[in-house]
Length: 416
Image (tube, rainbow, N blue to C red; front, side, top):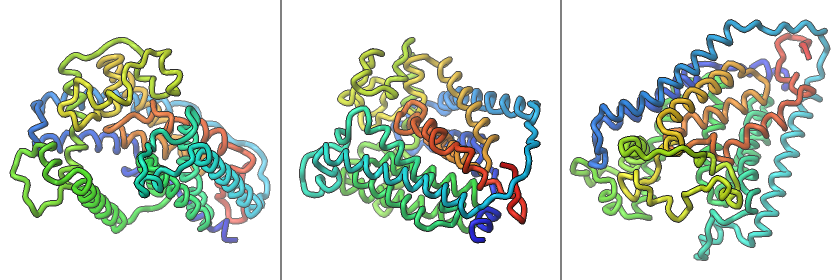
């Protein structure tokens, strides 16, 4: 049976590339190393101050991660002493695929409704020269959930492709991403691909050749974004904005400087905010979780109009302050440390619970994506990302069909 063979070949690979501990430390230490190269005059702080900021971020994470890992090892393991049952894998697989497929069609219907209400498709309207905003598209207070739903379904369909070798599921995943392209939502495209990539890493044994191709692809993406940036902003203008500390050679594509400056400026902005002592005691870091109509309840101060005019910015062109900036502005360094500790606990919990069950792998992909993108933003306080977590548990934690992911015996006899 093809389904049985697919499930037998489906293994959970917990290695360095999938470990939240490794990826978190690798990302932040990588930022520190890149900063130490001092390739831009915008990097105004000594390396020691950046080191302090990175330490505030990493050390509490390590404490939370190892604390849960230690407690988890001491905790008694649940024993499954239920009876064995013969399982019809074909019918079980059909149920799982049908569920994802039905939810995917429902997502398509929601997008059609939003397009009908808005009266336009952002990418097509922009291509026709119309002045439209992709940020104004969609039903207010509902659009974020629709995007999160679609992003989760990309991951779910790709999981079905890996588990059941169902090529239609792969095409559905790619089609949802193409919808994100039409809606000009670059963030959800990035989130979808990262979550898809993490599912691939946790379920597939990665060969060195694959790693090489991924690195090469990333370099090509840098080049592509550089050329696009040169067309949109102008090469010389960007070079002026980036303030390279050396004579930027004409033969070098600006994509490398684009990548460098966008990776290091968030930690510079965060360090600048800490240096200026710009902190308060409020709950503004939760503002992004609320619909715009309800943000007044928390007296959210920052609007879309002044998002590029924050006093901690070292340059008006680069406003990102990492996923920690809003927490610092609301709760100070202590708030940053507490958040990192909690993030460490959550990361350890999710990673230790990963198994073939779909809901655990979907949760892993979301948390891993949040982990990787913390240098730019905070997915825990972004409705487009966070809403995926309860949706994964609501739609894909059904014990009546999850048994089909747990086949270990040759004759298909497993514990339900």
